[in-house]
Length: 147
Image (cartoon, rainbow, N blue to C red; front, side, top):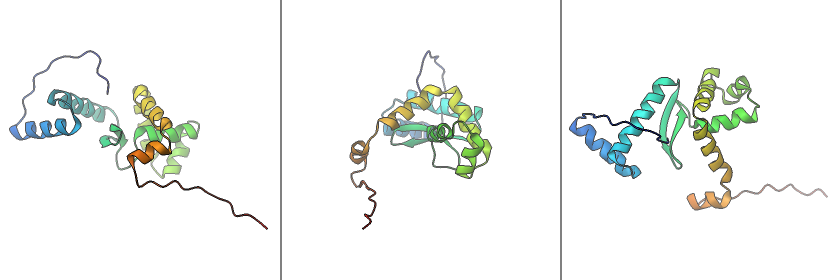
């Protein structure tokens, strides 16, 4: 989430919430102020878009569709491969159409976020993957020869 212009707001948290916020900020390398701003932004987005959740991933915090392991940008890859046919994507995923539409709605409002994740995915090759997952093995399909 990119910040543009900002405003300063004061907020009072319980001691325990403040500790949890600091732990989260430390875990991500953020300041407590950055962490609270991100959490507020994510909360606002959750309230504005159906089925939306945010999770940590190897690529950072990302928007996901609730009840799934798919980030919004991954669903948008499917939508593009199905040439925008939302009902077909819903059938493919065995989801209600509303969940796919929720991803499409989110992507329309935050296209830069989706494009950035998609571009990062497109740039990754097997060598990049192997650096992140040293145990990864490349499987090469071979056709049996006919005699």
